[in-house]
Length: 115
Length: 115
Image 1: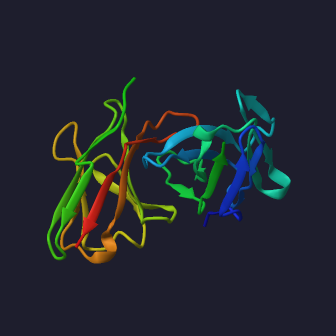
Image 2 (image 1 turned 180 degrees about the horizontal axis):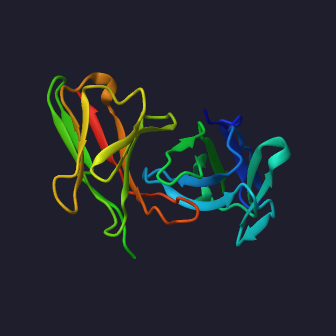
């Protein structure tokens, strides 16, 4: 069974502050994939970043960065210098390596960036 | 850039009525999925479909639900007799089997309201 937990339900920041979203996952597989999606008020799911389980190198992509730690089963996501347009619900998701496998989503974290 | 499309964007129906939600996956994709998101909650997997049959389904996907690929482009979700609790956003997604990350591409969603 796979499970994703996002303990933070809502985070409120002022523009230009950094925001870190926590994600903890459970899986018995040794090979799996992790994703972050953004859901703006319009409702669609926007893919942000992805990581596979055998690559723990952390990366930065523009204002986004992520910290993958296999030892603690965590895949945290940081928005640097937040902007009002970053206000949305952010979902962490997990998929096994088998092709066609479902995505298991966490409960989401609502981020509110105030001007 | 190819994208997944869904129609209608919003569907209102009376309890007990049948509804069909339609999706056009990306043309060279072979795996198709339906997910559901009740308002304010997380995104939940319903069903995956490959090679004209269901490859996996969740507990939510009971006898009231069915999926079909009636032609070479459409992928449909039918709810036979809608209930109030079926009110949700329904997302269609598709993926290719050879993708290293098993990345799923999501449509914009259909908001179903059952009165």
